[in-house]
Length: 294
Image (cartoon, rainbow, N blue to C red; front, side):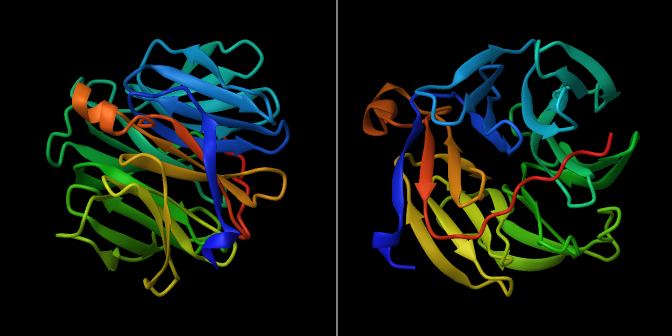
């Protein structure tokens, strides 16, 4: 791709303290994302001028579409069913509800309809979190001792899962059963960024298997081929970018969330778009998120 093929603009001017968890519902042409620390769900349909902010009673970080009437929200104490029309929340499955130290973080739906969701310490306590698998009423812990779970995404055929502990900055890949989304092997190193600039944050895989990673502290998207070679860098307008998601009926655009948490007054002046959400137009074959199997 040439630089001329890419355009970056602002998708939402709402500055999230900790923007995260973007996803897209093609049935309604609506993008959703969260301000975790601000306890808000943001929603933007089509080409409307600005997003609508829905206050939440808990810190939440990821959303999966169940059907036309319901969504699942991953939050600090459990997985909630959200009625799309009213916003009403009801607890479906507790998730570390007895542990006030942790909250949910990065998550994404596998092609089988299974949700992988990570937890972490509210103050990024080392090894306080874990990564879980949920499908059809069943919840399993896959990996424990995770500091900051991120980069959860899947190959187009559903045979590979990716994830990272941002505190270690070692992006892992693991073989999974395409019918269930459960691991069938041990995680192996995909890309080692320990000692590199910034942290490996959220990721998404396109239809060609390229992994697009938001670089916290680096102000960019990095693209990696299926064999772990970096093939692209896209500069964005905030340093603390957090997670990408494909949007649009053809999944050929990306939105990328960001954060201003941790910045003092001078830092925010130097990074005026921190916390805002960006739109990246580029010639890529993206993928629409599958529905969750409740």
